[in-house]
Structures are given as C-alpha cells and as structure tokens.
Image 1 (cartoon, one colour):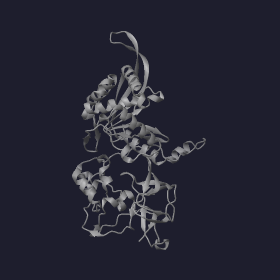
Image 2: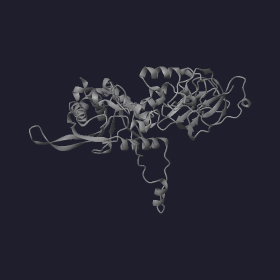
Image 3: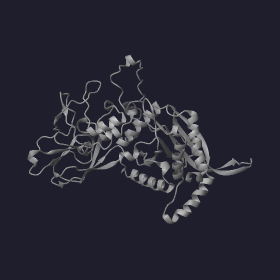
Image 4: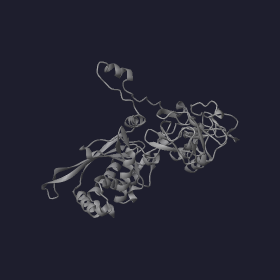
Length: 445
C-alpha cells in the first residue's frame, strides 16, 4: 500500500511551515536517511529525511508553498511492485484525529514517530481505550511520551500533540512549557471565582490603517513566520509580564587590559575573545552565585534551573534568534567564544535546530557594537530576566581618592519579571554581574 509522507512537526510548537525545496523528484528511489526536502519554520530551515525506502510516486505540494499544515500529506512513497496507479485520491489536508470510539489507535514505537512525518494511510490497529481530556476528548500519545510524562509529573491533557492525527510524542513532552499549557477544562470560571481575562489591546485594524495612509505612497511588507512569532510573543510579553528595570554602570578598564593580554597569549591558537564572551561568562557565573535569579515563570509556579543556560540575542535579516549556551558556567571563555560564533553563524543562515534556540532562564541583548549607550530590552517568556548591554564609552569619573579621571564605562539595564524576581534579588544578581566584569580574573578561578 502506498505510504503518505506527511508534513513533519520539526518543533513542539510548529503548526505549519513552508516547503522550501524538494531534494528529490517523482520517480527517484530513496532509502532511510536520504534527504527529501528543506522545510522552513518560523525560525529555521531544516532538512527532512526519509525513514522508509521506496520510490517517490507523487509530489503533492510544490516547493515554495507556504502555510503547509503539520501532518498534511506532501508526497506519496511507493513500495516494490507498486505504481502510480495504486495511489488513488490523496487529499493535501492535515490528517485529523479520529472521532472518539470504544477503542483508540495503537501507539506506534517512538522510532516511527511523527517528527519523521510518515503515515501509512492513517491505518492503525486497535488497542485499549486512551485516557480522556476534561471534555471527553480522547488523548493519543506514544508509550515513550506517556512514560516521560509520568516521570516528570506532566498531565497529558495539558499537551497538544504534534504527531500524526494529533498524537502526543516524545518531543511534545520534552519541550513542554507549563506557561503555554491550556487551562484546566474541568473547573468553570464561576466555580473557581476566577475573573475573566481582559482581551489584549490589538491597536487599529488593518482597514483603519490603510485608510489613514490611502493618499500616501506606501509599500506593504508581508509578514513571514518569524516576524509573526516575534510580534505575537513580544507583544504578549510586554502586555502580560510586569517588567521593572535595574540600571548599572560598569567600569571596563580592568577587563579591557585583561582581555588584551589574554588575546595576545591565545593568538597562536587562533582564539580572539570578545567583550561579549566575558559578559556571557559573567552572567553565567552570577546565575550560580544568586541561584534564586536563575528561574522562569511557569504559569502557576516558578521553575528554578540548576545549570546556567544563557540565551544571547543574534540579529538576522528580518528578525532575531536567541540561541542558548547550555551549561555556560562550566565552559571556558575560549569554548564559549567558539560556540557563540558557531551558533551566530548558523542562526544567520537559519540552520539552528529548535533545541538550540529554546530554553534558558536568562538572556543577553548587546547593542553596544551599534553605538547604543543604553536601552531597555523586552523579556522573552518564560525567561525571568534579560540584560540589555550598551557600548563601552570613555567617560570622566571620580577616582578612589576623589580625583577626577577617565574610565571606560558600560551601561547595562536588567529587565526583570516581577512575578519571578523581586527588586532586592534582581539587584543582588546584577551586583554579581558587575563584580565579575570589574574583576575579570575571578572568572577564571
């Protein structure tokens, strides 16, 4: 029987994508592991591999097609002895979960799970009834996803599945963020006393804005997936997160001298440390020194992280990425420098995998290289804070003995989620960052 190749879910939050390029054509023979296509998500372009062998019998979605829903058939694979006449009618609509019955489809093994995007014409064996959500809807999940969810204490009814027919898979559980979970459906608003949420302001309608500028020459720019995501996430962040701001000036003279000496010694190894590398290391160590600040908001609770996973904003054409340097407190300056260069390069090429730009508890946004003295950054949920870094500028300062002198001064602003971090805790964390940068040798201890 011909096998439908489905649009893969390349991240837990992906709902649709662009089929950027086919790497095969009809009639090609493919084996497991062969590249089939390039898929664009809102953040990256990723290669999609075959998991079965066979012949590409029919391509259903042309390359360049935008808005292809996850689990929609995009091609058909033929087995030995099959021909195009065996394909029949195939709809390019996403495969929906079947209506509730007395039995649920059997769970496939994790090896044939979703992210590969394959479905054998939606057929499945029958097994025991699956658990239900509060509204009676059955929950379909792979055995591995159920086991991981049980170990982590995650309620499967809070998850939205990205696998075939809405099945919950391993990636959904591992990428679960409570802040994005749906509210419990078995607790009516009136019974809990919860007040209805006010709708977020959306601004003037499209028609209203178009009419306002009808007599002016304009150019319309269509929003791509990345721009839509930035608009949605940061618009929501600014309206729902209670930001407050802490500002400090940091003297960089000791760091600049130390960096110069260190780079001279590392030149033979081809290593050149930037000021940003020191900032990343200083923040990673500060998160360990003030562990209560190493936290994220999870809807109805705070999650404290043990490692220092530091996200760093990288500007790319049309938007930005925040790749995450995991376990940054444990890495040397040269290792952080090399990893950051690699992540930034692949971010600009949109070649990052989802796990490389998701997570972390804290972020750094550095506009100092653009000559910006200081600014306030918007927190990227669910992070608890973000550090906005300005340029290091030579300024007149008062010395230790009261004399007037000059120093290289860098202004930083810590944007803080007050639900996660209070003022005194934020000040303690920022002081730790300042101490590390003004005494750079302690970061090597």
